[in-house]
Amino acid sequence: MNQKLIGIYVLLLAAFNLQANTLTGRVTDAETGKPVVNANVYISNTLYGSSTDSSGEYIIRDIPAGMHELVISIIGYEYISKSIWMKKGTDLKLDFRLKPKIYETRTIEIEAEIPEDWFDNLEDFKKIFLGTTQNATQCNITNPYVLDFEWDKYDRLKAKARSVIIIDNYALGYREQILLQHFIWDKAEGRWSWAIKPHFEPMTTESDAQVKFWNRNRENAYLGSVYHFFSSIVHKEVREEGFSIYRVRHAGEKIPRQDMRAGIIDYDNLAKPGIVRNETVLIFKGFLLVVYLNEFYSWIRLTQDAVTLNADGYPEVENSFEVYGEWAKAGVANLLPRYLFSKNMIKK
Image (cartoon, rainbow, N blue to C red):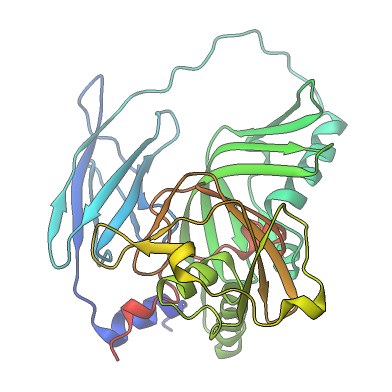
């Protein structure tokens, strides 16, 4: 009995016969020159990825054209992250040499039991990292013991991971392998930030009802999200997609109902065309209040003078903006692979 591969993204690829872009190469040990077997090679934030074979070689097919972040990682080696540009209908070959990770030699104190505060820290981490939406209740971190926690003198919780974090998201139908770069939660300020490089693998099922359940949740997770908002700016359909925008002085500031009306739609002060065709550059200053369907409030500010979005509304540089409100509550539990709802992948 054949299993059904789930994912609107995969179905779109088959249905619309996208022009393929292929990435190939070889991964070796930087010191010995020997092939590194079973290294993960993937496009960050997507479903695109592969593992190296016995010769250290990999191949990733059907990559959308544009700028991407390629990640190469495996336990025991320093990971590599590289920006790549894929031209439509072309192939690219890239080889990599991984440096063995040097672990700090220290005296290890063996404890019979895990400290109680570790479990408390894990719960705090999950609330912030996974988010507080309904989807978060259906997520399971399968290897939590790779996480180490510490509180600094400023009452901030920091987390590090000794290997990739594996999350089974039963709400969206993905297994997510997440390379955690940093995580910090300022308890006193109620603020947090993290940087991740995730890879998604679709779960499989033989149930049509399960397929519909996942696809419905994926659509709900996308609608009203920050990436939905970015896409609406790129395609100049902010109001049509249900968003209203207001300039405010700080996160948390709201507009009185009687003054809200339709919001501001001033594209010239929000964004400008990029240097490359089909790119859009966000240029707004300060905070924006973004209201979705007149009900869901979020705030956003850029952490750079300008943020470049590709044709699908995804930023070329991660962590180039900060979000608050509903968007901040979403967490990893609502995170979707890029290009899942791409208008540019559908031929009309």
